[in-house]
Image (tube, rainbow, N blue to C red; front, side, top):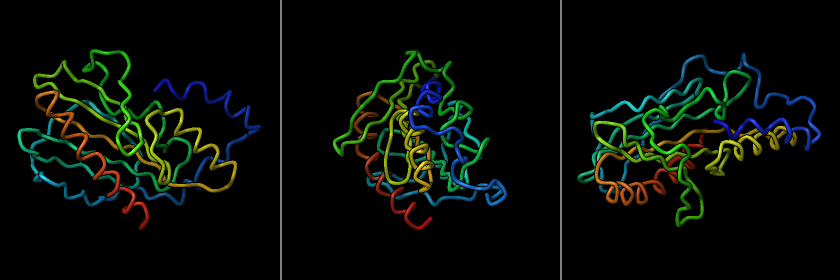
Length: 203
């Protein structure tokens, strides 16, 4: 996640000499992540089909990982929510990868802005036996961010204001025809975001 490498300059600009990391005392954090009940998606049914994309996400407090069948499109959802954060247990860190970059042909993701106004990162996984399209974004509180750096800056601002918020990484992977996959992702991404906001409210 190269987007976080310029953060020291941002911290200096904000006049923060030490970041009271960030959300809480490590001792207060749960040791094991608990299950976050996945959403019901319009036009999709839950499925047991899973395929690996080499993701590596650590330290979440709550997790929703499941698969769906949406017509001809196989869909995989992964939401990792961090109710608390401290050094070594962070949503936005180079240690968290939503996909193994060896499966991606383009060096950088495509940025898409959805009709609702928020942006996502799109990767085309064309080095798999069954090509797929991946969408991913971050949440800090109730605000979505496509870029890691933007999410981290919001967390730093929250820390400066002594107003920490939970954070999350949301990832969707759709297998099938690229055009159909994009249509499916477009229709379910807003549903998933609305579901996440409701879940975050009861955190």
